[in-house]
Length: 275
Image 1 (cartoon, rainbow, N blue to C red):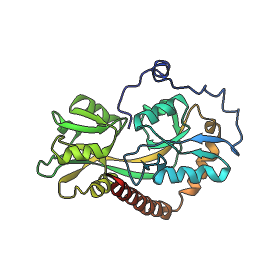
Image 2: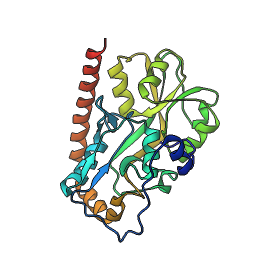
Image 3: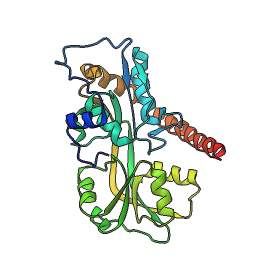
Image 4: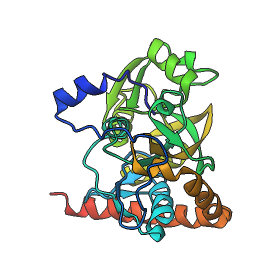
């Protein structure tokens, strides 16, 4: 989900007035986990897997797994977020965010280390106006189409390269923007997760106006630790702990049901409060 070319850390930090956590001098320096405070962030556009509540709390299956991984060890998790996914990834690169979950891409492995055990599988679908269907056999099929993409989103190295070369990309901060544009035929196609797309279509009341088809992308979300985070020194222990947590498939099924209900309740509450 990192389909943009990054500016250098130094120039970005100067222009955006961001601080940069200095890299740790070797994995042998280990801060105690008890009492350690870390930050998480996530993409707000993939409920129930990853989303951000109206009060700015990182939610979703991934965030719940990260809390279960860290909090019993005495780690304090700061889960407040007021940025989009692209900024979230940049903060991980700078070391200002310690841990996230996302697709494991070559570009992201330059600044974070992914734990070994995948959290959940996500299939990417292509959404389109229901009366202007788009077929999919390869990403090159999108040549010349108006395609909405979430800032910082990634669908794997191959699809990302095709998206840069072929369609007319319109980058937005939220998938709700993409779906509403699709319904109004201001976009031709939007690639997004199967779970999140159908949930958000339902929450916006757009059933019957947006169709979808599967793509060739089906990948796993992984927990990623910033290479500048003090958590990096604890990777072997975190790997083993995550493996134990995810041994039972029932956990993810339960979290999916809970997070889906939380998301729909949140959206309904927001619509009631709207003037």
